[in-house]
Picture 1: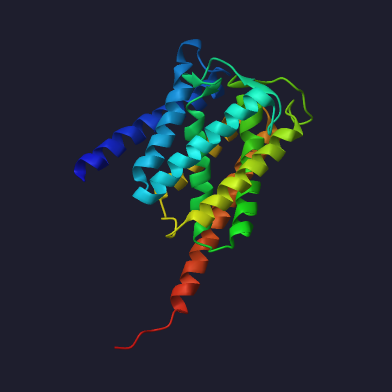
Picture 2 (picture 1 turned 30 degrees about the horizontal axis):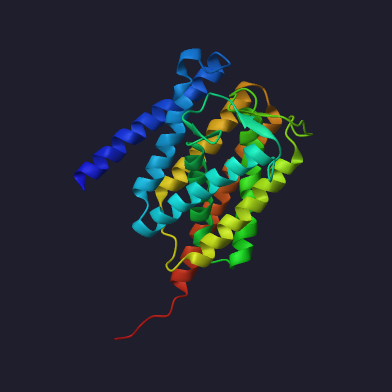
Length: 256
């Protein structure tokens, strides 16, 4: 147990250093240093690893399947233009398989786990949870995609669109893939998704990371959406706290 905590502490410190370095380099220099391109892969890999290491066994298995599903969707998208539109990855994120960086599996895992954790305590119906979670994923992508395809140079869009050059098909595709993932995840659960403060913190930190980089490049609409998502996170967390307190106060008392 002590070794596990020590490993998590070391990984968390490395993650925080990369987070601060990434944000700081854009706030101060307006770019990622040319000799630090490796940091993007390391940053996302650490995020995924921390989420996996802090999940229980059943949730960990589900996360691995989600990562593979996300990777498969990306591979189909890169080679067919469906469902996200036509795009291609640059050489920034390495290594790659079928033209897709392997670290994208970690990105899908982290975002899905984050939103699933935030919503799991409300005990929503399968399709209501899937729809809310998928809409949340799309709003997060409104923050991530313009920067990843622009200043961070992770990928390029081959077809131009109306939202910072991104085709609207991308967001429709994100929503559709997310609905399938969240619905299947809910339907396949034999036990409740376990609360995980690590997952929540890492998910929120990803949103903040891109919000601050948008701010550094004076992309105020994107920054506003990003920081708005953070306030939404706090509202959901407070609602969860109130719901839990209400349930505890109104739970039946068992008499011996």
